[in-house]
Length: 462
Image (cartoon, rainbow, N blue to C red):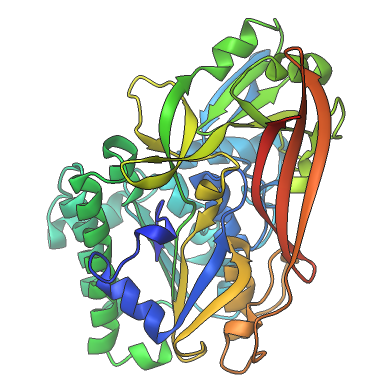
């Protein structure tokens, strides 16, 4: 179950008792990381494939493709747009195997249910149709007959409000009353749109967001109860994660407009707390970005022009833009919640967003409980979304398929290593001059063996 946007510091015994007790009964991962950019449709493939965005093939929430002699911008929240991405280069939507692909090859079945954007759920299993599996979310193509049958049985979907209490409960009911008892999938993925949906518009400390957290917890409880009733709980491993954290927005900017004012070529696509620049003149693009007082670390394909290579943060690959940069952030508190950031200006000004290199965006929630996991243990080692697929591949004894970039969380398994693994912390820095001053771009990492997690990044004045 993915709780979209759940920060680990928003989990409590009082507001999220089911998740709290799940962590007490299983493993609470104290240092879990999203991948950069800290966006939903960059992290959905990280969860499903165990690979970072560059290798998985979907770099962010929005991307550019050539269209009638120019560049057109598309949202990866739309499954049809993800097919456009695949058609543009003749490759699959995801460039590597998903966990669901491996389950299918072993003779098992997968069901994905999403109460958020269609792209979030679809990226868990883009090959569902050819595998005979099911991906169900609002706006999912090719689901007319199935949705009609659900409507006849469960009624019409309720309107999505803030918080989306009735909306999320509708999808939960479909899972607990139909999918689990009647379809009995080997792998069930439930992408739950809250608390992200509520916090974006209402803020971290708003009553609506607290209710969204209570709703997600109640729906988790309903799923666990369903497995209990069917006698499946003792043989089922449960993982609850979030795709990313989030930050309160304290300033609004327009990178696409500001960069266009400084260079006449190329296209800038805003991706929450980051921006992608598609341009053949990388040097000019970097120079334009460095003039923005809200620009954080900058990455290019080669690491030229006093930038860092996209490969450093796992964004290199055939579908990567030429330039990516994070917006600035700080550790300031808003409404008693740490972490604020610069956000992009949209028609509706969001109060909370994500996408930057802030530790508050990068730190996500991860809890695991079940027959294969240790009991009542807090894992202090760095872990991340890229570790979920390799760990479940090991537990389900599936074939290796395409290589993972994540690791098996052996220290969290009952038959694994008895202690947390050794941790290494490293920094990468590059100096540059801009706006009449000297600066240092710094990105820091945490590593376990060969697996590295991006832990934060910022631009600091020398």
